[in-house]
Image 1 (cartoon, helix red, strand yellow):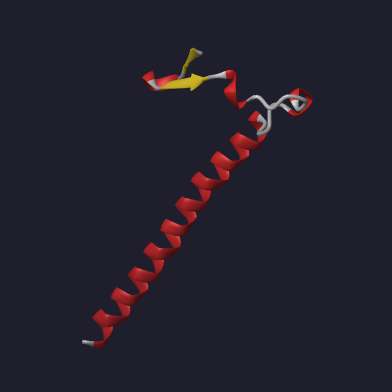
Image 2 (cartoon, one colour):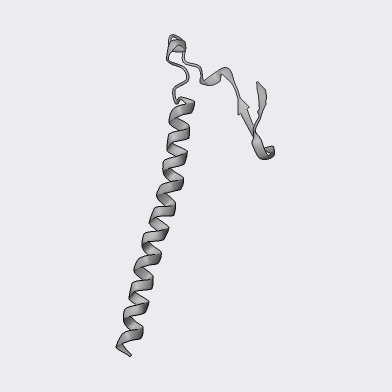
Length: 68
């Protein structure tokens, strides 16, 4: 077992117990490009969802103020 340093003081435990014999040519299972794309899409997606929900709530509030 060995430890690989990660940003912000986080540590990742790496062990060869997860290597499946005969699949060495398939590694890495998740490429850095895929990880980056997933992270970016998740971040942008969350920001977009937050903006849409905020807009809906603002419209509801605006409508309720104009009714009174």
